[in-house]
Amino acid sequence: MDLKFIKKKMYFFIKIISTVLITSAIGLESWNIYAVITNINVPSSLNPIFWIERFAMMSHFIESIIAAFYAPSRQKIPIKYATYTFFVGTIGLLELFGQQDDY
Image (cartoon, rainbow, N blue to C red; front, side):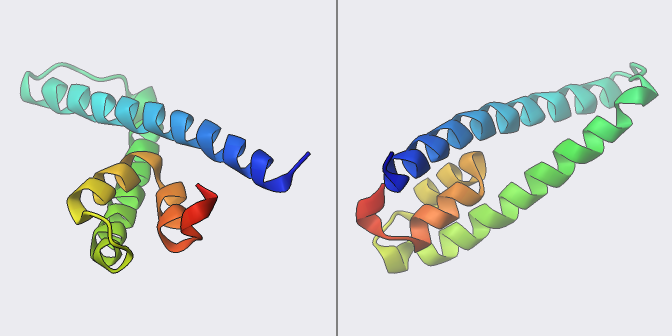
């Protein structure tokens, strides 16, 4: 098989999984904030999951800031590419700094 074909398929799979997980993390954090505001007890067994999702969201947020900063130099719209990178993660940065015709 062609290596570019495998890379393209793998990137597509990672993008789908990353988008689903980040969207789930946003929902989970929203539920946690709602629980705190309304004084609902959240099971303490979920604390490690909350920390993992917060770490992932902060990592993706930092990646999106980097993407927004460098997007104009690659003829991309900063806010659009930052949002894209927030949801797909490192793959967005790899696409931004990689060869334009590979994707």
